[in-house]
Each structure stands twice: as structure tokens, then as C-alpha cells.
Image (cartoon, rainbow, N blue to C red; front, side):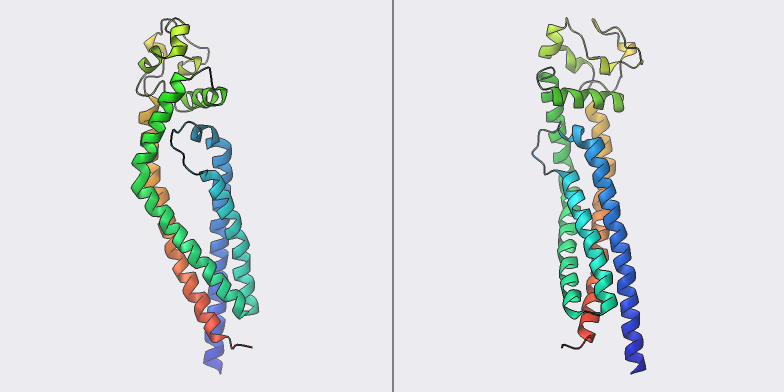
Length: 237
């Protein structure tokens, strides 16, 4: 009948529109994952906690969402009942993953901060021994204009500083051309400790990321309902 045909068409167009939004969300996750892999990879190496590789998870999830976004469009366009049910099941899995990611972000951001604080202290005490962490620490101090964990004084008791006559690394200097390092001239050094800057960044952004993850999870409910409604209206062959 005409009303049934009209309803089916509305469901099809709605599901195709949703799939496009879902695909765009996957593309965004992929771009953020690539950015995080390139720019944050070194910083993540400084954490003392064994967290999963967040950029890799974003890349994998983004790629999966892009692929399944196309599947959603295809299943809606062809009115394939099996594909629609599979798409609905995938959206349900993304819904659960989004809820877990969002709630984890809200509940564990203090643990993330503590892990980073401990990692920073370890990086200071092993500076010069682990080149990867040393490079990451230097990059962090330059990028955030910070020095040490709480302040430049954290450097003065490290094994590296004791070997360098109580010096601090060049990355602590405010000026492009360096500064007097031994003994340090406090007016030429970055005043803030790195932990306070990272902690402020984590606190302000973790809530936003968690809220976005929960929002994306809520979006899945629309897709699940549309896919199930459309699959239910397609007769079994």
C-alpha cells in the first residue's frame, strides 16, 4: 500500500542519512587517531601506567566505522534484511564500546593523571639512559613551556643533573638560544612544572572526550531502531 511504501521510503532515507553521519564520525575518529599517533605518541610513552594504545584503538575503530557506514548505506539502499540485522548488531557493539569508553574517561581521569605524574618522575630520574623517553620529555618541556614535574627544582636531585654540576636540560630554557644551565638562572627557565600543565589539559579535555563518546553511543540508538524497524518490514525470502 502507499502508506506502507511511504513509511519504508522514509525509513530507508533516514537510515542512509544516519549511515552518512556515522561514516563522518568514523572519518573524524580516524583523523584524530592519526593526529594522536603522530603528535602524542611520544608523550604517551612517558606514562607509568600500562594503558592501551589509544591512538591505535582510535585508528582501528575509525576504520571499522567507515567500512560499516558504507555497509549501512548499502543495506538500506538494497533493502537487504540480513545485512540490516548485521548492521544493527554492529551498532549495538559500538553502543556498548562507546558507553564503556565514556564512563571510563569520566571515572579514571585521575588515574591517568597519577600515572603520568609517576611517569614524569621516572623520566627525570632515567634521563640520558632511555633516549626515547628523554626525547619525549624534551619535546614535552618545549611544547608546554614547562620544566620538571612540579618545577625546575625536580631536576636538581636527578642522577643526570648531579653529573652535570646541578644543571637542567636545554629544553627547560625559555629563550630560543638557551640559557645559563649551571647553576640554573631561574629567570631564564620555564616557571611551570609539566605535571600541572598536563593535569589541567587532561581534566579539561577528558570530560569533553567522555561526553563525546557517550553522545556517539546515544546516536547509535537511533541507528539500531531504524535498522531494526526497516528489517522487520522486509518480508523474509
